[in-house]
Amino acid sequence: MTILSSLRRASRSAPLASKLLLLGTLSGGSLVAYSDSNKKEEEQKQKKKKVVVLGTGWAGISFLKDLDISSYDVQVVSPQNYFAFTPLLPSVTCGTVEARSIVESVRNITKKKNGEIELWEADCVKIDPANNKVHCQPVFKDDPEASQEFSLEYDYLIIAVGAQVNTFGTPGVLENCHFLKEVEDAQRIRRGVIDCFEKAVLPGLTEEQRRTKLHFVIVGGGPTGVEFAAELHDFIEEDITKIYPSVDEFDIRMNDEVIC
Ligand SMILES: Cc1cc2nc3c(=O)[nH]c(=O)nc-3n(C[C@H](O)[C@H](O)[C@H](O)COP(=O)(O)OP(=O)(O)OC[C@H]3O[C@@H](n4cnc5c(N)ncnc54)[C@H](O)[C@@H]3O)c2cc1C
Image (cartoon, rainbow, N blue to C red):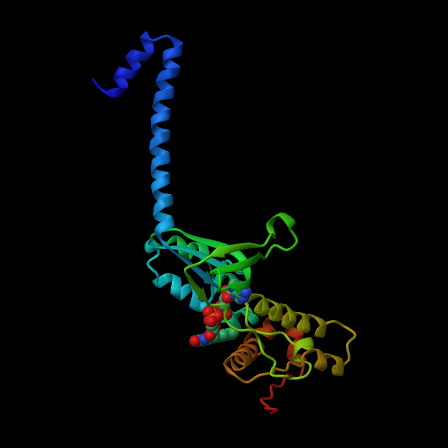
């Protein structure tokens, strides 16, 4: 006789109180089993070394992809819950590539790993090496409930927070220019470039005013500056007259003057 058929017979013959007892016994047993397995998981988790990774850029994500996370208790802290493929950032500035095509959700990346990785969308604001702790501030500053500082303990701390943009003391850059490092920067530049053309085609502007609106200067001649220059060149050469036919009448020039 199967367990189910015995249960059916018992429930038909037994009064209500014993039915409740039967159910109680069943659910009690499964609860014990559940709490036992939970306890085991918790014990195993406590035995694992704690790894905290700061940053989800190239270094942080490459590290996570190669880590055997079944052997560690892994937590990731980053103000961005996505990874950005930076080599294609210049192409986002003129719309050749959409921003959404160059980002991937960190949760999607970590989901593919055999184990659990916790991600906290926050900035690490302090490292306390004496107590093996990092202090973190969630990015949601306008929500008091979701902006409370928290701390994490670590056995191993991976610092992969990248670098900050640098003006090398060039006057006016900080106040007047767009940087090109983050996805938001590329989107800001894209809006800025389009706005310049929208303003320039408005009626009533003098030739001189149009020329000023369409005067772009790139500060910095490293790979990022050169790649952006190439994108802007292609955009003006190949796309702009299709979008703004009147621009064809303007005297477009591209100078590659280098000012050192
Ligand atoms: C436009 C552009 C094009 C590029 N093209 C190329 C290329 O073609 N080839 C190439 O090799 N390199 C290229 N690079 C350079 C490359 O992107 C960098 O070398 C690389 O991003 C550095 O990796 P990283 O992990 O050190 O820093 P990042 O990739 O900058 O990552 C830093 C991470 O740390 C997070 N973070 C910052 N502060 C905190 C904090 N307080 N707490 C927690 N997390 C924090 C950030 O949000 C980010 O997730 C390019 C860069 C740019 C800007």
